[in-house]
Length: 195
Image 1 (cartoon, rainbow, N blue to C red):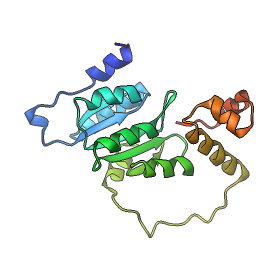
Image 2 (cartoon, rainbow, N blue to C red):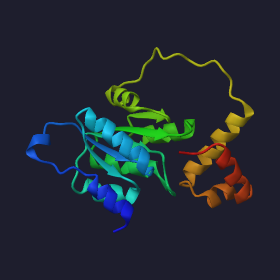
Image 3 (cartoon, rainbow, N blue to C red):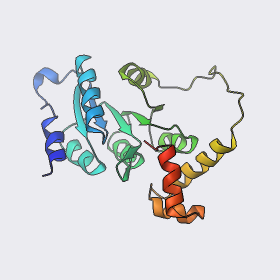
C-alpha cells in the first residue's frame, strides 16, 4: 500500500451508530492538501467525510463507505473525474455530485451533467459554494444570460478541452486528434491548467 493509499484509509472515519444520522460526504481529489482542508471544513459542519485521491482509491473507499454527497475534481493526476462521476452515479442514482475544476469548460460541464453530476463549479470554490450546490436540484430559468461573445482564445480552449475529454485526458492522443505536436499542446495546457 502506497503512502497516499495509507493516508486515504487513515482519513476515513469508521461508521458507527453515532454517525448513522449524519450526512456522509466523499471527496475525490488528488491534491492531498486541498482534500484535507476540504475534509476538515465539512467535518466542522457535521459531515462524516471519506477521501479518495484517485479513481482506483474511489473503488476501495466505496467498498466500506456509502456517501450521500460527493465532490469530484475533474482532473485526477492522469485520470478523469468524469469516470468517477459515472462510477458514483452507477452506485447510487440519488447521490448529489458536485464536480470541481480549475478551468470551467462548456464541454466538460455538459459531460459531467450527462454522466450524473448535480452541479459543476470552477475553482476556487469554498465549502459554502459546494454546500449550496448540493442543495440545488433544479435549474434556474431566471439565471442571467451573458451577452459577452467568446474570444478566439476561448473558442480555441473550448475545442482543445473537448478533444481532451474525448481522449480521456490523454495528451498524446489529444494532440494527434488536434493535428498539433504533443509539446505544443503541453505548452498550451501549462498556460491554462485543466484541474
